[in-house]
Amino acid sequence: MTADVDTSIRNGQQRHFWAPGDQVLWRYRGNGTDAVHICRPVTVVRDDTELLAVWMAPDTPVVRPVMADGTPVYREPLETRYRKPHVPSVERWWGTGVLKLARPGEPWSVWLFWEPGWQFRSWYVNLEEPLRRWSGGVDSEDHFLDISVHPDRSWHWRDEDEFAQAQADGLMPAALAAGVREAGHRAVGVIRAWGHPFRDHWQDWRPDPAWPVPSLPADWARPGV
Image (cartoon, rainbow, N blue to C red; front, side, top):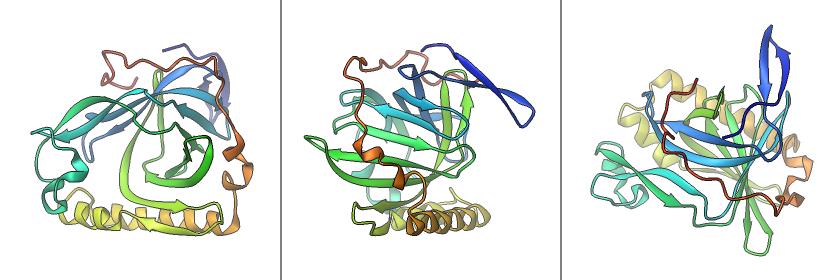
C-alpha cells in the first residue's frame, strides 16, 4: 500500500490524502466488534476534502465472511444467519468492477455498478458508519439497510428483512436502528433532489487501464492506525 502524498487542515487537525492510483483497503468491522470481517483492496480515483472515490477492479482478491461450514452467508436462512459463527474467506471479486464514493462524515457511501460492456446498471446507497480513515485505508461498520437507485431516478429500499433481523438478533440497538433509518430518509432526500454524487456523471467514468489489480496484504486485518 502506498504512502500519503498530500495534506490539508481539517477541524484543526492535519489530514492526509492519497493520490490517484494509490492502493488502499476499504474494510468493514463485524457489527459491535473491532474485528475486521470484510476487506476490499481498492485503487484511489480521487481523494480530497469533498470526496473519496475508489475503484474495486474485477478479479480483486477480497475477504468476506462465510458460515463456519463454508456456506455463503446469503444462502443461510435469515433466522440463523447472524446467530451462527462466521469465518473469513478469501475470494476473487467475481462481478464487474465497482466504483465507491464517500463524502466525509456522511453515514452512507454510494456505489456504481455496470453490466459487462460498461452498460450502467444502478447506484447502490450503502448505509454505514461514516468512514474512519487510517494510514492504510478506511474502516466502517455496515448498517444492513440499503437503497437501490436506477438510471431513471427511481429508487427502492433494499435488505429491509436483514435490517429487521439484525435488530431482532441484538446487532443493532434501537437507538442505532432509528439513526440508520433517519440517515436513510436523508439519503432519499438527496436522491429526490438529484444531489451529489448522482448528478455528477460518475457513470461515465472509466478506470485507467494501466492500473494493476490490487493485491490483498497478509496483514489485511491489522489495527487501523
